[in-house]
Image (cartoon, rainbow, N blue to C red; front, side):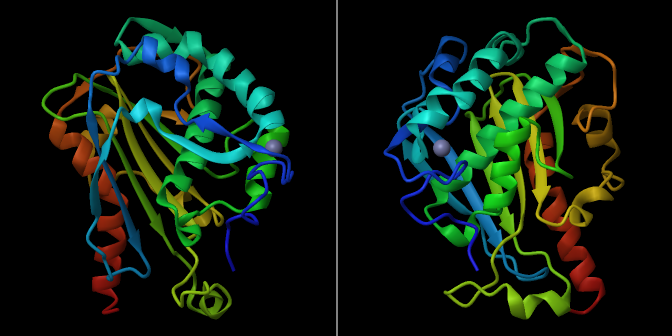
Length: 277
Ligand SMILES: [Zn+2]
């Protein structure tokens, strides 16, 4: 089982028309977050079972992160609804990356959550490994048809005063299944297909943290109970909890970012250890 589409088709609509390069963050973001970085930190981690942590793969990619492109989307999607998401989010997202004061109502929150969903889905393909793509074709199609974040997904915002860390994208793909389901999810390379992902991105002064899964029960109870500081610093964006978000919110430090990005994985490991797995 693989969540990747047949290699020639668009990951959203399934069309086999010619595909185009899509700028993951949107080319326009360069106006707000200057492309002054000649290289940037990039890491991903995969975990097959709780307790079996594979060290994160740390990579330095040449070039500016805003230039990262993936060729997985057909021209019709790219120039149509995906382009509309970029255009509609531009006036909201741009100022947030600068730390400019802003008030986000429900409509703005939903647009922002939709853009973050788009970026998270497409960025998974930077791994070049279909087993690490956690979304299914059904989920991606649902996203295309509704224009809303994936069912059961959760997104938080943070405000980060850039300190010594470069802009960064941290992504973890995890296989989280009940024992009974495991025999049915083995990928052709022998390990289970991942179905749950956690992504933390710093973009200018904006941080977003996203969790999604093909089985929302894997993340629905997550509440940062072990980390009161994260509770204070992260603002829930999706599902929408507040009529308004007044920006900027409380600022976080470099060490908050690394702790927050690893919190879910650490919790899975702790559970596995307790169960003696
Ligand atoms: Zn398409």
